[in-house]
Length: 281
Image 1: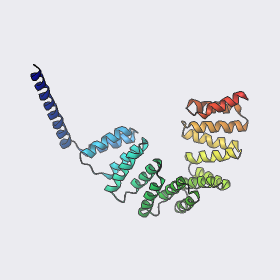
Image 2: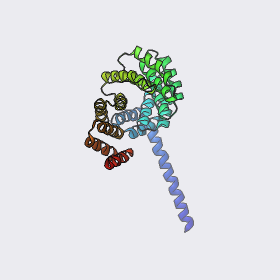
Image 3: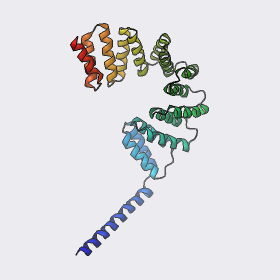
Image 4: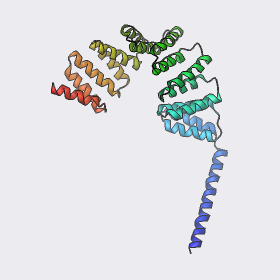
């Protein structure tokens, strides 16, 4: 009885394995990789990054060698904050198309996010050789240089970017951040204000400008910049917290409590200690 049972199980497993291989064969020889690429692109556009990656991986299995697909998959991983996989996908795109400047820039972003600014600088050195008159690689290399701690060394890249693209908001923002770190406060305010004038949606410039104005006790100006930053990113708990501090500095304790409470509700731990201080005072 047991021998017959074991034989039956063995035969079932063989049939199941055969069915799996048969389905895989049908999938590989009847499916069109382009259909998965198209589906992946549609999912990426709809912010379904995991679904996009699944479809792009299926296209890979079918033998696709599309550098744009590899780049888009890298962006999907990047948006999911899976930087190690993003680096792999961007590198694959570059291997398929060695002059693919967007893939180099994506790779440098992922390297910087993963905590390797020196690798990002090396990557940006390569892309600058491909597109030497584009401002973006200089801006990004400047930010990567800041991340290494060489603040002063970042300035020539921001200057170069501005000379190439005088209306590039990110270039002024990066230079403003560097000047802030170098304690050139007036220069930082000028550059950050210019960055905001050129692009009202530059959240980073708004936040840095607000921080400087708070330190200078220009609370009205700081609140205006925080308002804009929060409008651009309503889930930024730190912005609510800092706007609350600016409101308190301006004498609006009730408004400060509202903002700092919101920050606490969003998980910003420092908020509760400040609220306790307000209560004790």
